[in-house]
Length: 87
Image (cartoon, rainbow, N blue to C red; front, top):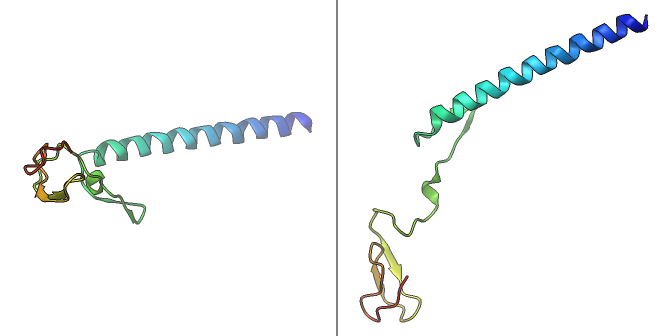
């Protein structure tokens, strides 16, 4: 009886390991597929891209305010045009 339980336990462990490996490969494949920056749905939940973070060297134009003088200037500029303080 102990041998039967041991073999059943080993079978369940092997099945669990196989399921975990399949899940791992599926997740890796989905991450690689979505790495292109697309916002697709995985399991009903939409994934968010990193577009919400601000990049200092972004090519998108916008407006920022100087920390020193408070003037508004273009976000693509590295320094404030009024007081020449670096961003």
